[in-house]
Length: 39
Image (cartoon, rainbow, N blue to C red):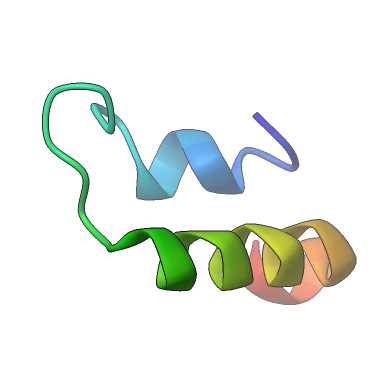
């Protein structure tokens, strides 16, 4: 949803989560901070 990173990384995160809670939170924060880098 942010920078298209969440959409590309988690196409169906509601169906089955790819990463645990702790990792998901860290990745989400990093993606929001480094939008161009992760993109």
